[in-house]
Structure formats: C-alpha cells, structure tokens
Amino acid sequence: MDKREMVADVNEDAIVFDDLDEAIIGMAERAGSVSVAIYDYEKCVEIFMKNDGMSREDAIEWMEFNVVSAYVGEHTPMFLHPFEEETTPIDLEEIVSNFPKEFLAIPVYDGVTGEEITHLEMFTRLHKGLEKMQCKPTDANVEKAK
Image (tube, rainbow, N blue to C red; front, side):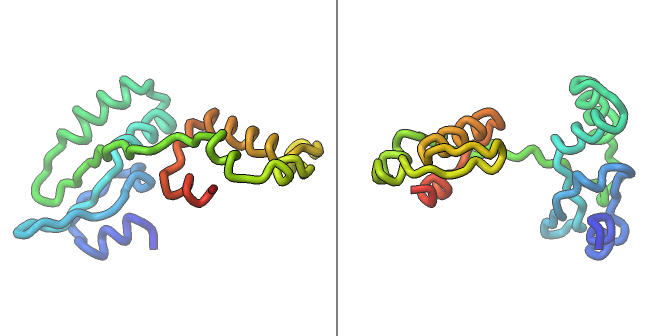
C-alpha cells in the first residue's frame, strides 16, 4: 500500500497533492477534526527543485503561495517543519582512547581502496567521512561506539 492509499484508508476525503507522495510523512488527528495528511515541508521543497528545476528560493515561494496557503476546507493537509534534533558530534579521540593501543595497530583492509590500514586509520577515515556527509550521530550511537 503506497502513502496515498494509506491516507485514503484513514480519510478518503483527505486532500493529497499530485507529485508530492514522497513527502507524505503521516496523518494528523485532533479532537473534533478530521484526520489530514501531513507533508514534510522541506521534502516538498526538494521535490519542486528536482522535478520542476526550481531554485530553492523559487520552490519555497511556490510552496508558500500555491501549496501551504491553499486552504480548501477541513481536509486540507498540514505541512511539518520539524525541529532540528540536538546532537553531539563524535569526539574521535575520546572513542579511540577506549581501545587498547595494540588493537588500534592491528592491520585491516579498507573495503573501498583495498589498502591495508590500521584500525586507527579506519576510525579516522570513518570520522572524516561522517564530517564530510555532515552526519551528527546521536548520543546513543556514540555510546554504542564505545
């Protein structure tokens, strides 16, 4: 069952927008109101940029004036702007300090390059990769890494 069908299963009159199915993240309900589709606002902007070749500014303007402002009754969807999750960046030195030096010196093979590297070098490359991708592991993941 795709997202559009899941929405219709809860409220067959719920309004869904063409070409934005990927941005549907769920349904909202409130006492005294009908259930409506919820869209991820940022994902909608990304879809307009990708599918229609819009700049970010144009996609946001389109969203505001043609989508978000298009109230068509109680079945009109909602658009979510999630709060940024507060995360703790990985402290590579702290993680590495929890491993014996002998372990960090053991050679392993880098699955990408085929090079023989140490565990320490592997951790360093992973850390640089996470920074490059702008990943921010959660505290729980940092604890698991220890």
